[in-house]
Image (cartoon, rainbow, N blue to C red; front, side, top):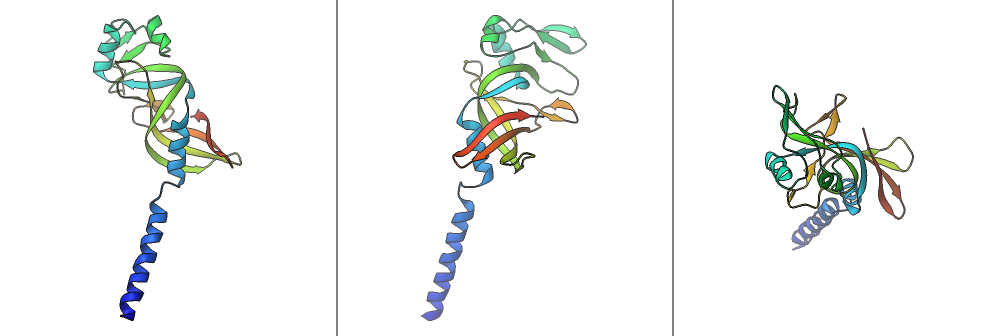
Length: 181
């Protein structure tokens, strides 16, 4: 009976320890929460577009029909309706090294964090750098799913590369300061 009680006590202690480790109170969860908590200002960032989204944008007058620039490269000028959604430059497709079309965005966007790769101490005291795969939410029927942001890899925007956010850590919580490259 004593062995059974000791075994039960040890098992209970392990279970409590595992619950503590698996809770939502870690840096990755805090970074995700901070990034998704409020809109974040983006300036000249690139967001990927699926083929159906490009077509939908044309049909809804968000940008012109893509015109061939050269070879397999196409460009579509963003209209005023597209600019109102914070699309800032031409929609480009067929660019070497890119599988999907993309567009530059500029403005304040709500975010969705799809994956937190890492969180480390920042260069400045009281900051963290979160490396994440994030997407922007665009309030339009053409974009029912958030648009993935492109991170920088080898000095260039790259599909699937994570983006880095500077997060200020205060006693009141975590707050995103900016996206960096």
